[in-house]
Image (cartoon, rainbow over all chains, first blue to last red; front, side):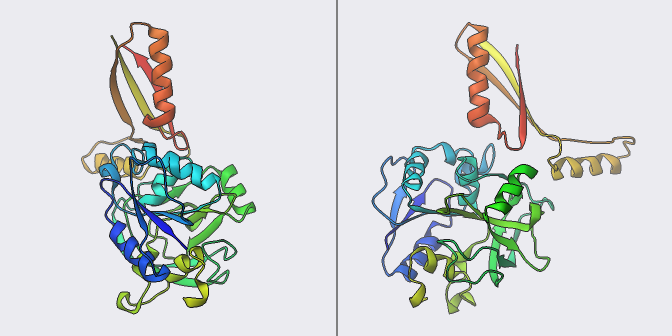
Length: 224
Length: 80
């Protein structure tokens, strides 16, 4: 399975993401620069974390209006899987590819620690390696991860099983509504999540709980 | 040329932790009776057109597309 990693000025988790994808898929992802309007044929496009455009205006707001996002939107409409992690999640909501908004953490503090995630829906292209209800460890590092949606949209997210991850066991680090840590679009091929699974994929990271997301998306579950 | 000011505020019902922190800080400075603080953003723009209706229409599009996140924010436009 081929993958691509989007690069924008101010993103700083792209190298971690490239390393994780290379390790898990056995081949290096294609790097795609923000001005590109055509993305090569891949099965998974990843928008990594960081601080695109210095978080100016709103986190992800400027990046979401770059040409590459139109190309990603077209790919997503054609069924290609898209994963946005941290700033990547913020970019996807700003681009309108996922519902909701990510606001300043309720504590007003940047949080950088390990939390626990409940896999709320293991029946997605990104979570097949897990079981529904499974609790996994995952690092978070963000200032604006406080997920918000209107109550009507929240209900439709719940009804359509679009909430994929929730912060578990009282570890909600940001005040996120309904403990939401990750949501998928209706079609199920665009996932956004605040935690960083790419930083927990091998023994050297102290665990591999995050590996299943990439293994699922890259369809290498058996090898995981 | 027309000058305009766009004010972006959080919608009612959206929690504003920054506003809360400012409210607390005002209290600790001894300002009593502040019931609520909501933080927003102000943009001052200059647009080339001389047509006020056209300017307002353009700026409205800018708000919808970029300046405000209408999931959580309202905006108002005033031409100077």
